[in-house]
Length: 305
Ligand code: AMP
Image 1 (cartoon, rainbow, N blue to C red):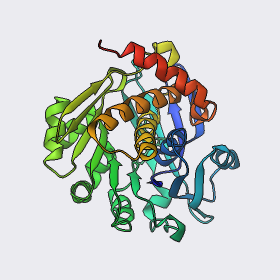
Image 2: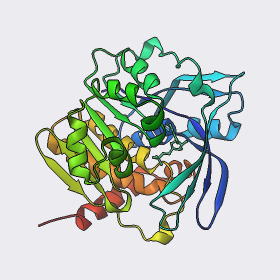
Image 3: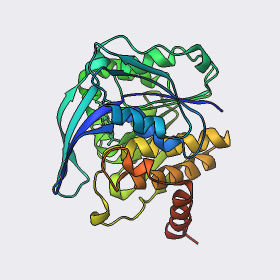
Image 4: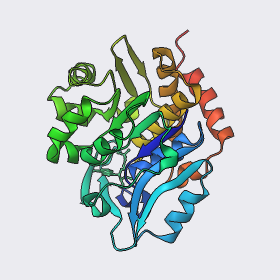
């Protein structure tokens, strides 16, 4: 089941209460793809970078097994998307320090003809009109899921609402769900978002786990329990969660509620490896065996009977 992702490939600068990392490899598409590739191959990337994209960022992405980069456009005259953020003491909340859109202000990247049989589509966080443009190229898709962010809710709400009518699922965090709906309870907020179009909504709650609200039922899952000392940088954890979730679904070829519950657990465990270091390094240095060992642990920790 070919899985395609579009989103940002970015240069991140991250401040945490104890450290700062400059110009690390990030972007919603990069995190998603690196996480999804543990579960399914190939992961087809559609994105663009500028002439300033560092060679070591390119080498890192190219080193990840299972990524197809045929849809990655290198625009020598353009600037790569860049983002800076600062985390507060609990590492659960952050503020954006700057967003330089760069290539996102230009025409969306072309989709290679070889990608045309993609059936699972993930619209990682990006401008909603870029997400809509990509989706319009896949009328025969089986599953389209999107992510979004406070910036787009603020500056592109109309496009976002149009997007909601086209997608099957939305994955967002609790603050964004509240910003969209003005409802603080994640389940009530998710139901209000379902009224806007998607068939299911996953609301991520950081260290408090995630909730899936589906037309059929509701599921909850805790986060993988990490102590604060084990959290170096939460950036990209949401995208990594989505990568694990969609990667598992694409590999299993199943879309039923029970498969989504299992997929959420894989998303949670995959994301836990992003938290341990800056940038993509955490995922890039993790093996399938590491992932399975943590999943084994998580099944035991989250078990009810
Ligand atoms: P997450 O922590 O999962 O929300 O993802 C953070 C990643 O998304 C970072 O690597 C950023 O480069 C990227 N990012 C930050 N802001 C945006 C935005 N407005 N649109 C798309 N990607 C973004």
